Length: 150
Image (cartoon, rainbow, N blue to C red; front, side, top):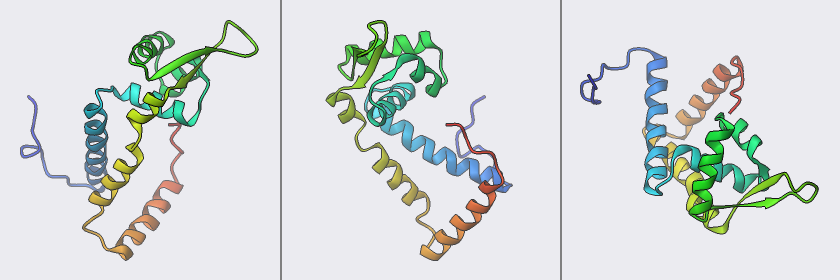
């Protein structure tokens, strides 16, 4: 049975509240990605390539936490859509470097601004001093946790 948000139990712990906030941000990202007819993996890969042009397929698979075969199939789709191009490496013809095209960069442009707007909407009930206090408290909590690898 699938519950909708009206049937879901009320959050009772701080961790439940964190999950709710994470869910709201995740939904904003999913909607933005879906509106561009991209999968999460495609959007992530394009974003990575914009910031790291010339990555190799193996590196992309590792950072995206997917298999090389899955990455290969996904890159074929992005290439067919004109969002990436593969070029031979200057030192080895066996190595292909992957680059986002202008169209690939354009399709994901605005994601960071959308996420910033989502953050602002989530934190809208707080004034500036409450936001600063929340930031200090979250910084203390996360200082004791291992850093996420991605």
